Length: 454
Image (cartoon, rainbow, N blue to C red):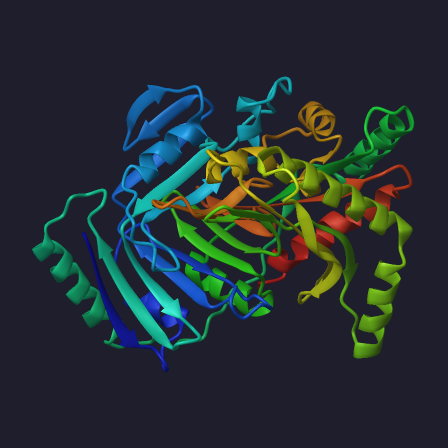
C-alpha cells in the first residue's frame, strides 16, 4: 500500500526541505543537469527499513549474515520482491547507496585485492519506503509513505504522512543561516615522486604491449570537523553537476558531485555516459573558448575518449539486443566550475530476461576509471595501487522495487569515515603521457572537493 500527498513548493528548496524533515539515515539525491527533464527532480529519503552490507561474498541484511555467490543478484531479488504495477512516480521505494569498485573482484579473477584500511563494506544500501520528491518543474512536493517492505498499517502510513506535511510546512529557526566551511589540509597516500614513478612504469608496460591505457589514482585524506551537510551545501553551490548526492550511513557519509553516469535503466532502455578529456576552465570567455577548441583538437584526448566510447559500446553490447546499441551524443563539451570535459552517451535496449543489476555488473567499473583492455588494466591497478579503492570509481545511486535504476560513477566524491575525509582521483595514462602533467591532473580533478573550504 502506498500513500501520497502533494503540497506547493514554489518557496521551498530541496535544501530547506531536507533541513526541515526529521528522520534517520537521510539521503538526498539531486541533479544540476543541463537537460531540464534530467534535472527535474530532487529526492529526499528518510527512515530506512533495512540496511544491506556486503564484504565480498559475506552478505548482511540488518546484521543477519549469509554467504552468497552473487551479492548484486541477491540485492536485486530482495528489492524487487515488493514489485508492483504502480510506476507513476519518478522514483519508487527501493535501495539507495553505493557499489564499490572492488565488487568486480567477485566476478573477475584480478589477483590479490589491495589492503583495506577503513573497514568499509564493498556494497552498502539503505532500503527506503518513506521519501519526498521535489518536482522543480511543477513546483510541488510529493510526499510518499509505503509499506511494501515494513508492512506498516494504513493508520501508521497516514500518521507518518501527516508528520511529513507538518514538518515541511513549518519553518525552523536559523534555517537560512550562512554556511562556513574551513579549508582542509590533505595528505596523499603517494608522494609526487611515487605517483610519477607509477606513471613511468605504466608507460613502459604500454610500450611493451601489456595494455593501451590505465587509470592510476591517488587518495587524499584530511581531518574533518565540520557538519557534513554544511559541506554538501557548499559543494553543490561551487560545483553543480548532473549527480549530486548526500547519503548518511551514520559512521560513513558519501558526499558527491559526479559529472558522469555509470549506468541508467528505465524500463528496457539502458544508458552509459563516458567522460574523458579534460581542460581547466578559462578565466575569461575568450580563454574558455580557446581551451575548448584546444581540447577538441587534442589527438591524445580524442584517442582516449574514442577508446572509452568503444569500451562503453562493448559493455552495453553484452546486455543489449543486437543492433540496438547507438551513440546519440558524441564528443560534446560539458563545462563545470573548474573543468570542462569531453562527453558522449551510449544507449541500448536490454535483452529479454536481463535486469538493471545485469547492466550494472556489465559496466562496472567504467573504462574511464580502469583502462583498456579493461581486465588487464584492472589487474595492474591491483598490483600497483597501495590501497583498496572502496566507493571510489564504483557506483552511487538507486534501484527501485520496479527495477529502474540510476547510478553515477563515484568520482568527485568525498567519503567521510570515522572523522576523516577521503577524496580519490585518477588520470588516464597512455603511451605519450607526461608524468608530472598526469599527477597535476589528479589534483585538478580533486580540486572541486578540496577547494570547498574558505
